Image (cartoon, rainbow, N blue to C red; front, side, top):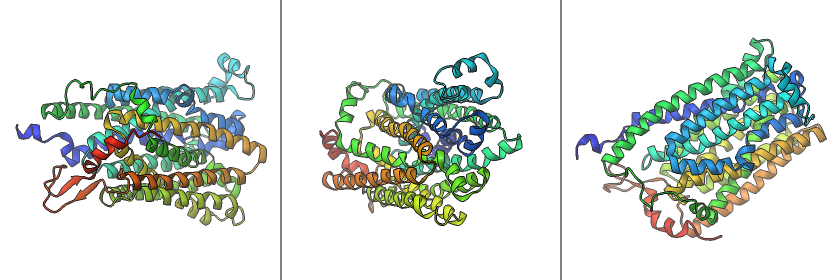
Length: 488
């Protein structure tokens, strides 16, 4: 076998990190689009006649098709059947289509059309602009959530036996940079174009097209990697019957206790983060008495520490482990932050205190995702990993769909943010309970969640291609095959 065949694309650090940058760019632009309306909440309410309930319905629409039409489950099947190249392009295309529909829905010209008048004629509590924007956000949400699971599986493929947790950490850091960027850019672009709500959405829609182009380049790289894997005998051109995904495999996932612990922890934790992001700029605006632009810039600091810490936490997981412990610590930090938002900040409405709480919440947002997503390959077989990620995302999306609706109704009923923050903190308390139970189960059954992804043994030839290193998951494979599908 020649050196050309032996050395694959992902054996080159430069090439595999370039691949990561390409797929992370798509998620960066997606995260920008997700939150482009958050700093414009007050503006769109005055310009289009929305209220908090309408904004909550719009925010929840991102997850509607994923949850109630089971699109995420379908996405998992597509991912495991068709692979990361087809699924990634499909998800990027759906994001562009959905964003374009949402853009049309909020334009001034659309408000005077007969179609908008027809939309206004039914379910009159929801303006036609909100219905159109929600439709686009639904389609965008299908693509965005599908992209998230596809990216996770792509990283697991390109960084298998290498710096997988670090790579996932960098991907999350780049994606969260999108939140930081849009909290600054959306108000700036809006002000530049005379308080426009259309210009920021148009800008972010154009960036999604750039993200589609980035993933297209990655597709060519991945296709070449597969050819090398086939030539090296590490990948068959046709899957064997044992390797092929079957619908019945979904039942095996649902019967796994560890799957349910991870999924419930995920939905509880993220239900206290992403819905909070939708309302956070307005919360700071109301609580501190500052302008919408100042509030958005203040909240833009939320992902700062997350961006900085997540890659280092991934590196810590690769070499030191303690994933389950990190989940518990992250939940505790989130509880403290939301309770402080509810009771401390209204008493001492100081920007420095708000900044401290926002940044500290970002630490929690580093700890939990950095530990959560690299743990899934330890408890789920690679053949059904895409479906497992999608099922976790589907369960997560149930919370992300319903919680914004709940918060919007509570805001309309109470006129204040104390009760919503208490609700967010209660999700954190439940997340802590499940993370604690997850650690107990890991200690009893030995899934390796507390173990490093990479272990160093002096003189050991290893399995990653570098002397002295072995994949920590290799020693747990036999246990995983026995315990993965243990009935609840």
